Length: 315
Image (cartoon, rainbow, N blue to C red; front, side, top):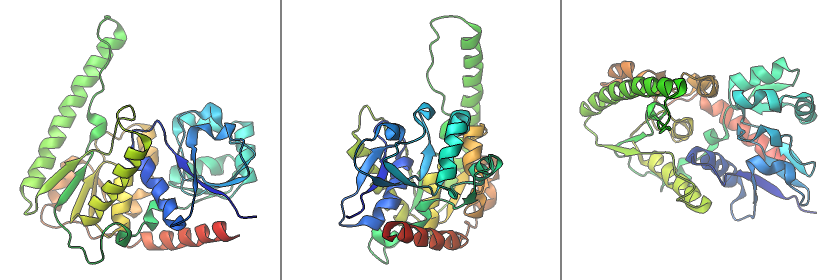
């Protein structure tokens, strides 16, 4: 009987980075049918036995953990969201992860947390490091322009209800004004850096509203974003799944960390310094005359990941 494989899907996600991670799996199943299962609904799966690549960020609904017994998981490039940690690492959750250890972790934060719970784990890095530039643009495509994707996006304040005067609304107002000032200063530094470059800059966002764009449309936009990264001379971003594909494509990348001070964001970055420079916008000036050299350190991780995937698919 042939194995049934599945990748994670994201019906409610606004982050193209989720879709990019699934594209990293799909590249190994060209011309083959592969199922898609909602990351946050794995616990209710009742279909035939399926082998699922559990790469990505877990999770929006930790109360839905662990997955169904009909799912045979391959844990690689797994990230545990700090706010989900308590629920996912309950006695039942730890027992489940131990059943499928060793767990390949996307970042060293997750690896340490699991290790502290007695779960065998290791730093696998991210599957997106195995993406191939030639799969998104013709070979020898000439690179053009500076691609800027979602820089300092966490500093852009969300709207909140000011209709009632409470301590919370006052606090949120102060917080918003502070973030606005930080964002304004950071963008001035970025624009100054770009003004000193010969190449034109193109701005894009990695976020798409799931209420306005279907899951298929968001998936297609993720592929378009990968093509843009593959064509760029330089990528500037505050998004991990813009930076990591850039590394895989040999594209120089500058990762700006302004606005990523919360543990939910800081945890994702642990270990990423091996692959790209992580800097504050105040440090952009040092890169004006000389862009970073594309990292080669990722190759060791990429080759190991490819072997693991091949083994999981065939064995």
